[in-house]
Length: 267
Image (cartoon, rainbow, N blue to C red; front, side, top):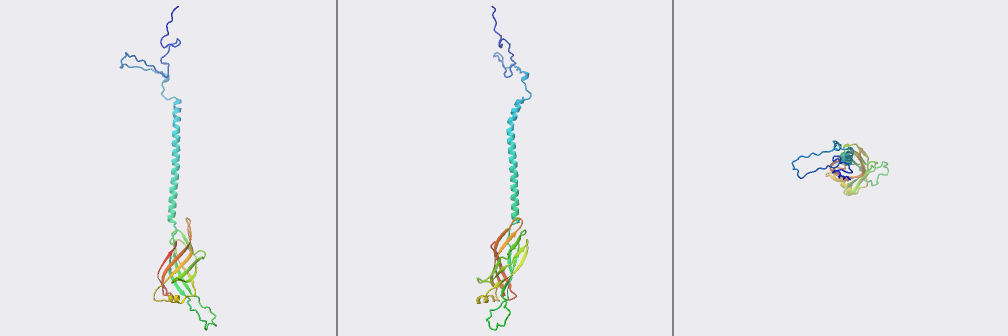
């Protein structure tokens, strides 16, 4: 029988193996006897050379890139929304500050310009008055108060509804009282208000003190009345107390004169 020779190296199942048929491995043989300065040529099958990445790789890379781009888009949208809200808040704050600066209610200014004691009569003793059919005049203090609305953009109403009250005080005694009239003012307006205070029965010392003609008399006017300051932007309502301390000369004559005065409020 003839002896079969073993298949050549690299022969699997009797078939010759092509060393360049593998797409994933390259076999390089290096003989120790060869010198290291020799040049080697590596051959790669043409069907394994890619000038452009395969579609599968491009799809994988794109899937990895999408989450980053989506995060960036979300961050950009959030930043834009926050910037818009911050801008609106700043604008609203500026508008509020401007309105508060331009429409801050200010209390009107008060000053006494004149006072007169009129229709003064002495109490009758009843003798010789039986045939007198004319009633005797009733004594009153005639007051004149100047009010200036210092607000540039707001209206003022003082004593609205005729609910105001006024009183005149002399030596800690209330010698006159009456109602304070209602007034309305436009911005930067000035008004002189006239009103009368009824005088009750005066004590002898009080009446003598009012008749002093050579030196000023110290008196106090107190006014309690509702105050309203209004505008389209802001309104204010409160009960205001005005206290005016003044010195008057020649009160019992028609030539009475205010020598000094100062008015304060609880605004």
